[in-house]
Image 1: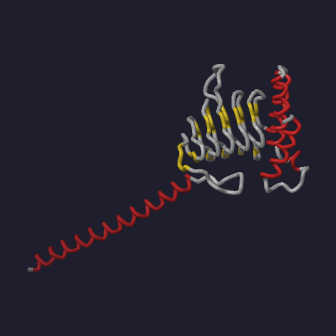
Image 2: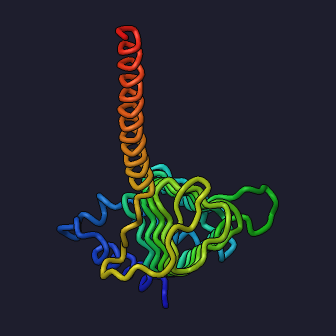
Image 3: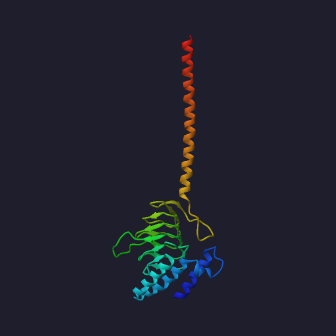
Length: 230
């Protein structure tokens, strides 16, 4: 598939994925993720043709206008949707397959300065929530979901949902939804609800214990008074 055909597909992907879009002109002014991907396509072509300086200059300019940092050497597949996109970082040796959704603030970063594969591999169909950090030469399996603000430092199996710091798998099995941007469980809300219910149980138990102790004290006092009178 040729470069311009892939770019055309990138435009179509945004129109298909984002229900907020109302006209084609918005694609050029309201979607920094699309601009960054299109510029990456061109820069990557230059990079593979050994015009690395020009590729880096182009992506440097792209970072300036979009606040999205993509290294031209990384490998990005087809139908990638970067929603909003501000603060997204994709490192030099990262590999992204097809049909991936990335929200703002995501980092696909490295944990080593060695000249080796040091950035993540993201398989097809993955959704990465806002602010998530995926670090090191790890693999995120097909159709996996990464929760917002999660920090992923080890492989995530396919068809699972991972959240937290460090991220852990909380749900297995692919979520069947018609939307490409599937819902990710809100673990913070679940934990907060758990804490509230736990507090309610403890308070209820304390009230029962206090009532029981008060009754026992009253009986002791009544017995004391009766003894004095006798």
